[in-house]
Length: 445
Ligand code: N7H
Image (cartoon, rainbow, N blue to C red):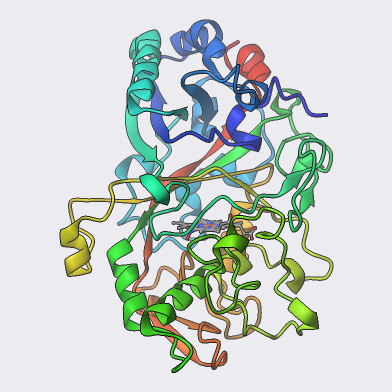
């Protein structure tokens, strides 16, 4: 088994709270920082063991992760063995398809973000109380650079991201940790997520064991614009689908799942709430029903977000090298009446997904998914197009139109051109989430 007392809580199970604050900081005084981290902060860091048992869950769960520049600021020069981590996310922004730095949050540009606190609880008051404890412990040793307040959406939208789709259904099962995987869950070596565990063959300093690289991305979502696009382009099957149903089908085919979470591979025409709610069935598909050939996209487009990011049976055997554990949460307000009426996101409001992905190798995990599959118009085959949700056609403005095939099941060869992005990258950083013992024995030493 894994050392769950040492592995930070967010990595394998997620903190699963309604509110989560991402607090990005710079280290101003390394000596003070280390000493406070080792004494007063270390006991606040929440382990996997603690989060798994309701009786030991803290009121506010606390995790911490460091950028490469943060470790350097603390005098830790060991090479963790990940070149993308070492360079930081800005250096990678063009390679992962961000269209220039214009949309990036200022604080993410450069390498001034040294670390991030993840604070999760049921209420914002609890989160803020813990933040103020942490701030007074550190005093001037840290300075706030940026924050993103994540929160579950209200009422029945809880668990759904801002476009309305249920998120967090499909995660890899970690061998040695996940007791009984659900049908359709892929079992991966612990070393695909955690450094120096079974299956991780990269040389690591001993203290890095059981840490994980945390990719953070602040992804703005243009929700009224997305809704308008669906309304304007319903899949047309007269006598079968109403225009409203045709719009819902287009959205489901862009995603690969219906808003409920039901996979389109199993529910190709209409949403199926019973299927969506059944964990024995809602992940149990391969995109190859009834012996369909690998060129068939009548049930699910090759470009669909879930198929791009995990092509399942499109590879035989299924690819086992490119998996991440996601621990994202929505941020920002609900769409206002004015925004809905004008089909336009207000210039003064921002909503989106605080995207979090864990892996032991950024180049094989997040970065591979984004660069080699999502942004590659010729994956899964020539002419597929990029992922219509998060795919980027590149940094050249003349390439901003994204042409995608397979979205219309009545004519899978036909193309639909997206004039605009519905997701805008506001940037982020690559972090390392160390084991709790490394925080005590190495990072604060
Ligand atoms: Fe995605 N969305 O809500 O539209 N994602 N994602 N993602 N995503 C998934 O199957 C979404 C992003 C993956 O195993 C679902 O759990 C949004 C990035 C992977 O079948 C939904 C954004 C990357 C999966 C969303 C966003 C990924 C996945 C279905 C940004 C990596 C699992 C729920 C704003 C590069 C695939 C589920 C599988 C599923 C959404 C970003 C990766 C609803 C809005 C940047 C691996």
